[in-house]
Length: 261
View 1 (cartoon, rainbow, N blue to C red):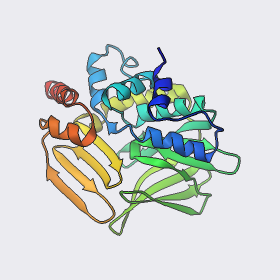
View 2: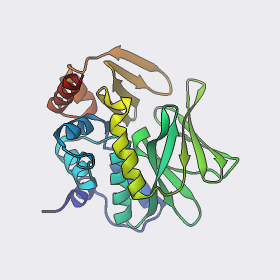
View 3: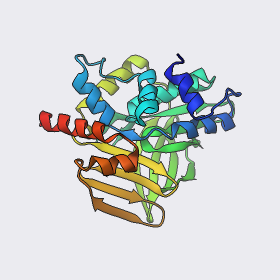
View 4: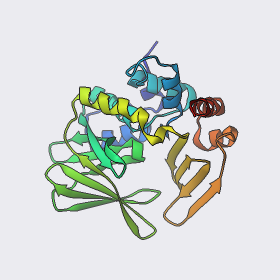
């Protein structure tokens, strides 16, 4: 039986091509079907005995997606995307990022071509390859939810800002150099202790904008409007309809968090 990667290619009709920018866009579009969610991360931690056994590898992430429509958080999403790109012949690596909440708590993918480097960030729902700027310059990219601004701050250092409703906000700073796998695993393992694991979180992007759920609030953000409403995590059927993650998994994750508290 074909592995998760082969079946993923078949599901989204991605055929082998030269590893150029057009093929990168095809791979990234296929991968955009994986939502950002911590449901699978919460449940895997509950089932695991050791620190590294709770890390979901590429085959597991893809098999779960093909079976349930799930995705992951930035670490598992980036690790899986890197594997997909590696197998497709791309020169790519995982880069670590710092946010307001701490250092090395975010990560993204950098793809190298002869003429430029491109950023993909599945954890931040940036599914279009965006060219990384040179030092002292900016690159902007419009998504269905906002405008992304990348600013080259220093050699190998890029900051990502979002522009929403006229407000420019700094989101994270990325060190655009490969992180050794041993170090990446340490940061990944540490991420289980962050406050992002205290509540069920779900997010996805479609043509209407970004849908985001956390702490009983569902947000829809687009260029033209922002809508917020209360939705309890116990309303799993509604969340399943919005994000495509099975209701029973959402309820299991909510129960696991309640037991932890």
